[in-house]
View 1 (cartoon, one colour):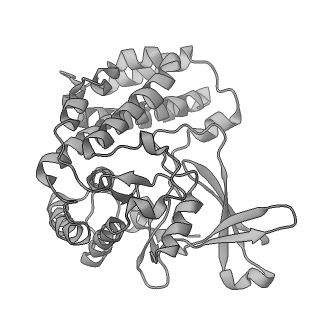
View 2 (view 1 turned 180 degrees about the vertical axis):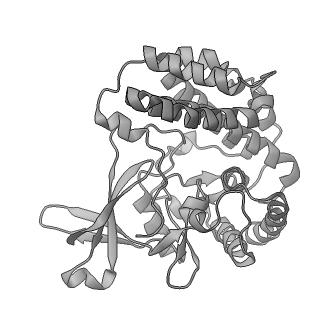
Length: 369
C-alpha cells in the first residue's frame, strides 16, 4: 500500500485519515484509508465501543450493506486495519442542510434506521466496552446518562479553563443537574427496547456513491446501544429537514421501526421533544467549547476574521436552546463577540500545534477525492 494521492489527508473530528492507492496484491481493493487518532481530541459524546473498526466488522458479519469494509493487513511486526474508501461525495455537497432529499434518499435513510432496529444489544456483547452494571436499562436511565456525561465530561472538564467565558455567556450546569429541567423531562420518558444506534447520522456521514448514487454510511465512531428515539432526535437535529419532509420522515420512521422492533416508536410524539431539548442544550456546551479552542488557536492577525464565524455558531445554538437554558434573552451577537475577544486575551496560548488541530471543525471527509 503506497503512493499517496495529491490530496491524501482527510481530517475528521476524531481521526486524521490517509487515503492511498492499493497496489500489488491489494490492487483489487481500490483506494483505502487508514486513520490515526488526533492527539488531544476532546470527547463530547459517550462511547460504547473502543474503536470504529470493531463496529464495522460486527456489522459486516450481520450482513449490513453500504458500509465501508475493514481489511486487516498483517505485517512483519503488527496488524493494520484499514477501511475501503467510498468513492463519491457527501450528501451535504448535493443537498445542503435545510434542503429536501429525494424520495429515494429519504427511503434509504429510513431503511437504515429499520436495519439498526433489528440489531439487538447482545449482537455486540463481545465488543461492548461499558461494564454491564453501568449500562442504562431503560429509556429514562439512558437520557439521564447522557445528561450526566455532558455535565461531568463536557462542562466540568472545561470549566476551569473557560469559567469566565461561561459566565459571560450566562450558561452553567443548572440545566444539566440531576434535578434540572432536562432530568425532570427524562423521568417522564416511555420505555422503548434498545438497539444499535449510529449516533451521528447527518449529511456529512452519508456518502452518495459515484457508481450508483446510493447512500453509504460512514463514521461509526459514536455508535451506541440505546433508545432508538435518541438516534432519530440526533438525526433531525443535525439534518435540518424542511418542515414538510421532517413530518414525512417521522411517519415513515414510526411505521418502519414498529415493524422492525415492536415498541420502538412508543411515545414518539411526547418523547421526541425531550430528546431534541437535550440535543439543543448539548450543542450549546459543545459548540461554545469547540469555538473557544478554535479562537484560542487563531493567530492575532486572523482573529477579526474568525470571531464573526464563532458568533454566528454560538448565537445560533443558544437561540435554539434558550427556553431550556432559562435565558430571558439570548446574549446579543455583539456581547458574544466581546466575550470571546476577552477570553482570547486572557486565555493561555495553545500548548502545541496539536491543540489547534483538535479544534478544527472540518467535515469527516471533503466532497470527492
